[in-house]
Figure 1 (cartoon, rainbow, N blue to C red):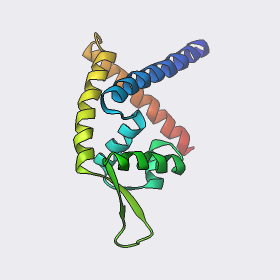
Figure 2: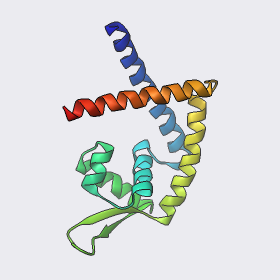
Figure 3: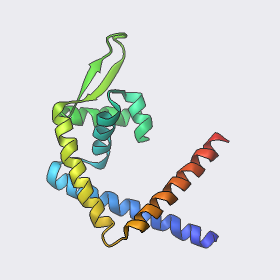
Figure 4: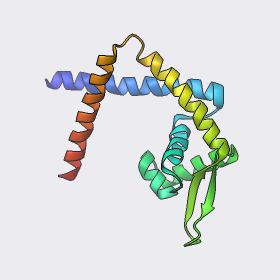
Length: 146
């Protein structure tokens, strides 16, 4: 079993790396946007305005990385900084209308990329894979609580 787990770990790492390369290649060519920039837009679009520190936690990056990331997305007019009305020291990052338009295009592109990755896989297999991922995520959550 340990040998299989090691092999599975290596396969999973390889899969994630290759999917990231595929995504970044397509996104850089078509939209000049990275996977992390896409994830940032997606989070701001779904969760609403976020403090930089909150966004860094969600993306698992440093606050310094968020500053650079935000600067690039602001330059593209996809996000903006907004000061809190309650506390002027607090700054939120929020998606702009142009950012919402871009995330719509990127989500369509994501569907195409994922269709390539899962091409030929039966729907039942995809559902089973989803259950396995949920099981593993639950195990990680339980471990983190201990």
